[in-house]
Length: 226
Ligand SMILES: *Cc1c(COP(=O)(O)O)cnc(C)c1O
Image (cartoon, helix red, strand yellow):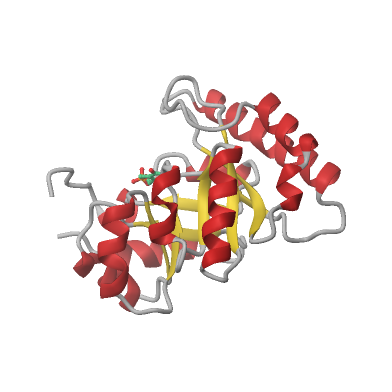
C-alpha cells in the first residue's frame, strides 16, 4: 500500500528551506487518498480533468487550494471558476478571456500561469516562446480585470537525456525572467514558475522552479481505468 503521509514527509524534507511550493497531483486517485494527504498536512492539490475535480471538490475540506494543471477547454471554465485557485496551463488568449469572463461572473479574480511549449513532441499545447512574446507585447491581457497572470508553466520532454531536460527548463526560466523584466517591472505578482514532475523535479528546481507538480511519487501509480 502507498504510504501517502510518508511520501509527503520525505518530499517536504527535501524541499525544506527551498521556498518551492508542492502541488500534490491527485488525478485518477480516489478521494480517500486525497484525505490521507490532507490529514498529513497537504493543502494544495492539482487535478487535470474538470469532471473529476468537480466530483472531488465538494467531498473535501474547503481550506484546500485547488489547482487546475491540465489542458482546459474553454467551454468547461464555468464549472471550476467559482472555486479554482490557480490555473496552470493557459495556452491561448481565448482561454484567458473566458477565464476572465467566468471569474467576473463569480465575482473573483483567478490566478493563471501561461503554458510554454518547449518539449519535443510530448504535447501540442502551450505558447511557443515567440507566440508568448507576441501575446504579451500585444497587451490585450492588461485589459482583463479578473485574471492575474502569476507566471509560467511548462512540461519538459519525457526523456532520459538530462542535458535536454536541463536545457528546456533553463529556456523557460530565461523567458520567465525576460517577461518579468519587460512587463512586470515593480509588480511582484508575476513570481511563479511551475515546472517539474515526479521524474524531473530535482532538475526543475536546479533551474529555478518555484512550484513542482508531483503525483506518482506521493500517491503511487495511477489507475486509468477507475
Ligand atoms: C499528471 C501530471 C503531473 C504529475 O505527474 P507525475 O509524473 O505523476 O508526478 C504533473 N503535471 C501535469 C501537467 C500532469 O498532467
